[in-house]
Structure formats: structure tokens, C-alpha cells
Image 1 (cartoon, rainbow, N blue to C red):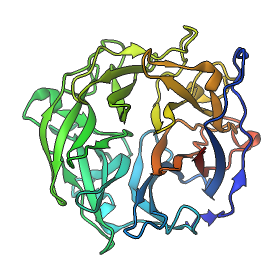
Image 2 (cartoon, one colour; image 1 turned 90 degrees about the vertical axis):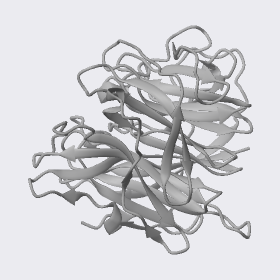
Image 3 (cartoon, rainbow, N blue to C red; image 1 turned 180 degrees about the vertical axis):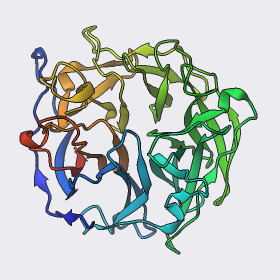
Length: 399
């Protein structure tokens, strides 16, 4: 069913989160322009996991935007093939969503469906290609994730040639023949391209879903067609619930920062080389209080003006939201203490009764970054609070 496109941007008020008042209000580093890309809430599916990437132009004109997203099929973690929207510039008209046949799911003779979820696209300048990284999933006819064969859940990638406008089919990133990588996903993760063209790809992995996940960062080479594993860094472990998973990576000020999901709280760590990280520590505010983000993603917002974290948390009058996954906050990170500066916390996507926990963050240009998210209309009463199944782009305009 075709969704209605709403292309006119609208301004959003930037509210401070419920928190102790700072002694002096910090000057804003950015303004936010919130756009509604489309709305869809027909009871059959919701658009989910929107994540953007910018394709730069050779003449210095504004970049083309690619937004990947999927249909959430109203069953937990059950997703369609990967759809794509495009915008000829950050202010242009959206086209799509369309489903390239190369990115669609594949039905098997035994009724199993092989799909790819939790995708994050990114630009690879050395090859002039856009790479989409995600997690291969095997689904039963009822939409249940299966572990019925070895290495059922692996990291996969597809490549877009922006000149030919053609995608490759999904390929598996071949990892070491070790039981610890029997389950190995790059999922909902920010990954990096190094100056020499190598990729740093965060993974969460393990023998399966019955033991806590561990996380590491893999260094990979890319020749314009194939992504190849070269080595990985130290393995980060936490024997609490499901362990450490859905890691996101960023580089800032000559160092690397990794944020990790855990069922009880989010964690952060840092590295000098992007591969070997210090023991993770819980996210806290600069006054010592816990951040309150748990069992969901956090992502980085990096700029020359500083390092910021985008997250959800408890304590914002949001007890009616499952796992407190709305609103979306952004706040500055102190890179030395690895703490959130509470006085800088701001709401960048407001809460309207819906889940906003599955979001993306990407740099669009030196002057603009995007936070993208779709409303998960799952909670009772979400529609009454204003949720419409909207897909939002929060345009971070740097000062």
C-alpha cells in the first residue's frame, strides 16, 4: 500500500528534558528542523529502522540522500526486504519507498524466508560506492527467527553503484571459523570508513542466543565489490542478561568511542586504534546519576563542535512508553570522563505515545547531520496521544 508523502518541513520546539536546572544554560550547538517524511499505520505494517546516508557530488553541490527502511510486519523483529527512498538533495522531494529486487527477502522451498534486518548504509569514498550492512535472519512461515542451521545469523552487505543505480545482492561477510562467530551480527550499528579505505565494523556475536552476547570491532577491506574480514580487536564481555550487543562506533578527536546496549543499562568505552577497547563502563551524567537508557540503542552524533550521544531514557514523564523508548534526546559527551553533560540535554524528536527506540544517525555534510526514526505504534493509547506511524527526519543544523 502506497504511503502518503508529506514533504513540507515543520519546525519543532527544542525542549529541555526533565532534569535539575543547570546553574547557567549552555549555549546551543545546533538547531533542529523536524520533518515528517511519510505516515503509515494501517494495521498490516509499520515503516521501521529508517537510516540515511549521503552520496557526495563531484561538483560540490549538495549530496544525494539515500534512506533505507523496512516494513515491520507487526510481529516482534519480523521485517520485510529492504526498501529505499532517495532525495536529490537535503531539501529535495522524496522518491519511494521502492523495493529493489536484489534487496528483497528470499523464500525457500521449505517455507523459510531469508531476509536482512537492522541495516545501516554508509558511503565508501575510495570506491565511490554505498555499502549497506545488516543482519541476515531466517524466518519461519509465522515470522519467528530461526536458529535451525549453523551460522543462520550473520553479517551481510549489499553495494550500490550510484552511477548505474544498481544494487548487488546480499553477500555474507565471511568471519573466522570459530564457534564464537556462529551468531555474528552488525545490526543497528554505526560503522566507520578509515582514511585508507578499510572499514571498522562493530559486531555482536556468540555461539547462539542462549548465552550472553559479546562485542568486538572487525577490520575489513573493501575493493568496490567484496568486503573481506582481516582481523578483529579485543572481545568485550558482560555476563548480565543478554550481554553486550548492538554496538555503535565513532571517531572523534583522534580517538574511537563505542556505545553498547545491555538489558539493564547502556555502556561506553574508548580506544586509541578502533580495535582494542578499555573495559566498558555504564553511561552516567556528569553529576554521577545513571543515564537511565536501557535495553535499547544509543548512537553517536559527532561534529567538529564536539561529540554528542542520541538516546532514550527513564525519568522523562514517559512511563507509558515501552522500555521508555521515547522521546529521543541528544546531549554532549565529555570525551575525557565519558559522561553525559546533563545541562546540554535536549529533546530532538518529541514523544507522541509511540516507540522511537530504533533510529539512525548520520552526517550529511559539514553543516548538517540527521537523526531518523519511525514511530512504533505498539503501546495501548499511542494513537490517542498523537502517534500516526510517522517517519521523521530531525535535521541537526550545526552553528
